[in-house]
Length: 420
Ligand code: SAJ
Image (cartoon, rainbow, N blue to C red):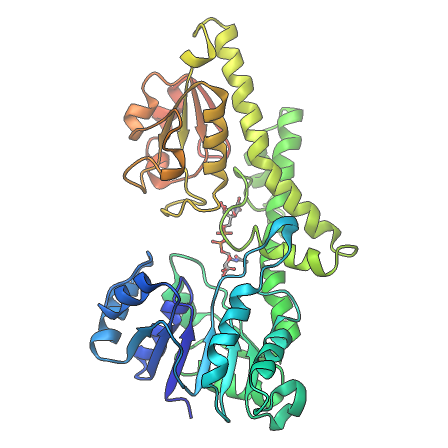
């Protein structure tokens, strides 16, 4: 039934998904608005960093199962995996989904299946079907013709972890939320092509909420850990020891406090729930606020440590104090600096006017957003040398290896429990 599959959006989710269909000998047409991505993929290379993906893309392109293009072409199924960021005031921005709907509408034919994969506020799949119907009054869609619709529409979110995308796309269970029973059945058949995990049927709205719920659950739990870290600091208790003790209870499993919550998912998705139900989503909103406040709290600790150094006479002026930031990525052992609380903290430390050294073993130079600041890119040994204050922002394996050395230096503000 599905021989030609079109993937709209060839990013962190779209490209691996397209490639997995291609690896099962389906003809895949990948569509992206970025000419650089399209060219790179057509050369059998990748424009993103993800283990195993380069080999798969190379094979899929050279065997002619995968091809990238800027404009959609007819296919049996269309999957949309485009960004859904938020605008000012945490309002969801659905413009990429709308643009995708308008781009594929002209090539839709009777019997097609359209699947939305992008993380979206509840009701977006219905909105997508509406955009498609407006563009193609000659075809019927689920909101008009239900099971008999010419084009069926479903919501099927991914739940993969960056760094493990290829493996998790195949093995994770997947929620399949059709706007109709027919859409759910068609989407199940489609994903069965490469998914080995369970394909669990539901409706589109529940599937949309399920994705948001998973990431909000994690955000609320991290907020609990971050709040504990503030409470323990005030009460002079070691939060890492406290959590490890409490976690010995058979029904307690507290997550780890950190420098804040970064990435493009957990720090964004809960706002989609808050936006729809602001009065009810109280704990979800507060968790976001607690996690967003954590970088500022860490900066406050650094400021206090700098003043201590000046007061103790180790340095005469603030500009003579060397602060070393260990880690800039949004989580351990990756090179992704976007939406990173560690990065936000490093920038704010630069504004204090002290001398700043940044150590990030996963990148090779000072990141563009720190260029023009007083930050200096150093390796771990240089960074530790003459450091008056060390701020541990990410638990990279390179830092764990130097734990003892870090502990011996100056004043350490350990936001991630590296020294524990
Ligand atoms: N973090 C903590 N403490 C913890 C765990 C994480 O502070 O105990 C921080 C990390 O340092 C990082 C942030 O949270 O800054 C998010 O990292 P993460 O590893 O929890 O998650 P992501 O954003 O890489 O991926 C999440 C995953 N969702 C869940 O675990 C519920 C992934 O499965 C989703 O597919 C992904 O979001 C997504 O695309 O939505």
